[in-house]
Image 1 (spheres, rainbow, N blue to C red):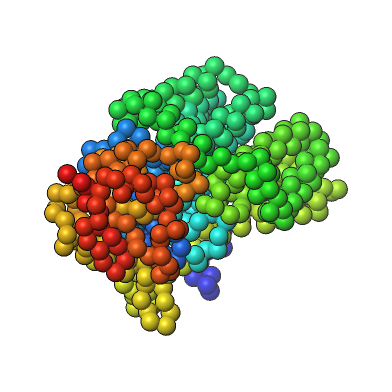
Image 2: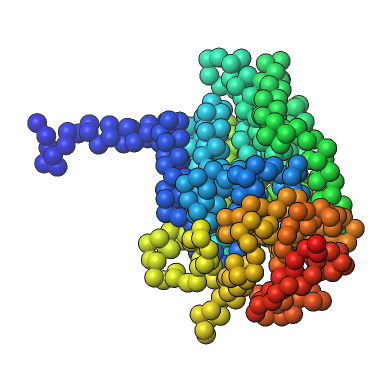
Length: 542
């Protein structure tokens, strides 16, 4: 008979066990994470407060791809084609900023599909669930790494994706193979690792370098088998050949762009050392935990694991420091890769340090310390996602000027917003350029711009110019010594928009780096035809 509460005595524990099994099931976690990505896509982009131009860079690259162009082969790019392809897929179901948002969701889905099958074979289910959730949140959070979660942006999501893919590779490199078929797991894990290595090359070249460092540095600390290396070679070969086929096998153009970016950027040794030291508080906290955790493992008799984790921590921190420095202003702070590694370290502590005296208190303290590192990024990423939903749930609170283009771009930005008048000078500048182009050029004429990005072809649904670039970031992908040559930079453009003033209302004549680098060529091959409040329109000399 049921008791007074209406449940049998064994019912509550059974339901709890069922819930626990649910959250430890790889199928349930995969479904949950895919659903999270879909919900983010359906809710749309959140309010953008910084780096608005970056959204337009992805739109231009995606629009070029949909019009048959390929990065490196047809236009200069400091990023791999996988930074544009998700947005190109997003443009099949949405427009403008919403398409970029869907592109980030597709990236998160791929992380979940690659990560869950591998990670649940290598880590205890509870920690595997945490790790997979952290990876997907890292992939889809709508703010830049190292910045506060309310500073919404669609910029630099490729860095988030790169770290998440590195996180998958880390598990394959350092976590032992489990299950009844280790040979199959070795081959499967190696195949995923090879695929990740190739994907990172097509996302951002430097991340593939960090992946190679990780693979080589962890060789002594895991069991090596032929099938693992066969899988790694096969996975990288399949994805590599598919990616190169998409890029029309123009390896020379890929290498040319990588060299151009490297010369334009020239990150100094002082910057590589100095930027991580600017984050000394977080670095010290993480390093202290790693050292104490190694001591705890050693004291409990797991000396081999202690030595292993000292080396792995140094490797991961080194990669984090290099990535932090080479990402420059795109990542002002943070060590996301080490935070992921800490999950694996905490999992080892939970498994190897016995919850008995004299280790009980030390074990609890180490787990609490480790979780304080582990949970920071996922909690902030989740908070950013929740904050971004406010635009969908409270549309009136985030109403603002929109881009007046045929594509009905629903981007809402508060960057350069004048609080007293409610006007947004950045959106006004973009709309002024659209009006000038519609009034002074034909629908078949191709457009270039002396701007950070050139979204005008997409906004007006015109054929994009060939050559040029999706973005011009002085000191990051071009300068006076390195960058696309003038003939390549202007390509087959018929008209060029040149800003008269910047978003703050200041004159561009002495400030626009594109004017300094490409101004002489512009003056000799194009003539000023029209002007508006924000722009000059130049037309090619017949």
